[in-house]
Length: 401
Ligand code: DOR
Ligand code: ZN
Image 1 (spheres, rainbow, N blue to C red):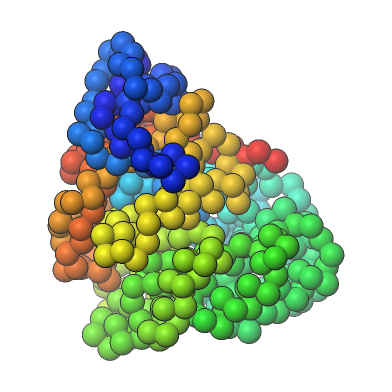
Image 2: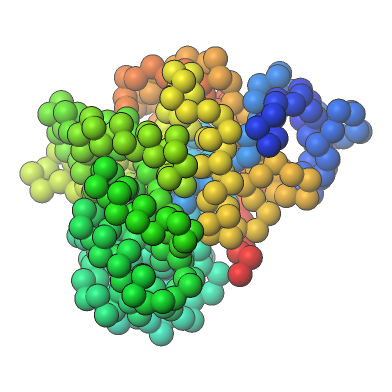
């Protein structure tokens, strides 16, 4: 059933246009000034329409930790946040470090209402599985301790992992960023590495050492951009994640990195834990984020901290290019109809009771944000519209490799 979305404001190559978008069979069929015939007509009311966001760093907790989140609740929260594709991390139970675990996760993810892909976990001894894993976004390497038990410390093993995987996403903190860049340089491989959640001036400086060769990409997260260590005093465990919140100076440097084009991606690192878990003495690390990623960035746009083309580049185009995701990340004829309509003037507070994530809290609760997604379309289907969710199943993404 062809759908026409009328009155869309679009950024195409940094220019703003007013266009109509025709969707046929889940794809963008025409971006046009004309009004082609369609069975269903929607009106974007001159709001901006962006490519749906690709959040390349989420923890949807399935299997094994579904009291915190699952692919349905996580994807509903993502859809509400204007995210149309997520790439899920491997620190589940069991971890996604074997072919059997990957296949099981694939089966479970079919309930997702946003498109999805998987990162495969590296261990001290699973190189043969890494080589066999099919249709994965990247291999995730933990050089530091986090939720789960996936730390790899031996530099020889890390070298082997870099050589065996076209792209390795690294959780590296502090000096470990430098170590990873050095191991990559010595390995002489052409494969790439992507630093997840870079949180400090020092980490950004180390990651930058190798930027020239385009072999290293850098991701930052909203919590490291918009919160700092002082928030731990007020929020306690609810502001504790890995890497930890840093200083105001570090925040400034991360924002500058966005302006200077050193930061390639903004991702949520959506890491939900229940309130009861956070209230315990040995609380787990992590904060939820898929519902607030885009609203926080639109609010930052409204305070002149970031431009819309930069949001589109860092949250749609670059993730598609870095992970070589087919047919996504751009508003282009022939691409998948994954879109989000945003109301840049809508003011609303982040409220725990509104959240669709199972954990039902946000470190940004109470913050009034200006700029919210209003309608999210995945594969041509409306899955979120003004507070309402539509449970239409999405698809696993494919890669151009
Ligand atoms: O804070 C974090 N939480 N950092 C991580 O690296 C893992 C994540 C989680 O899975 O809870
Ligand atoms: Zn993470």
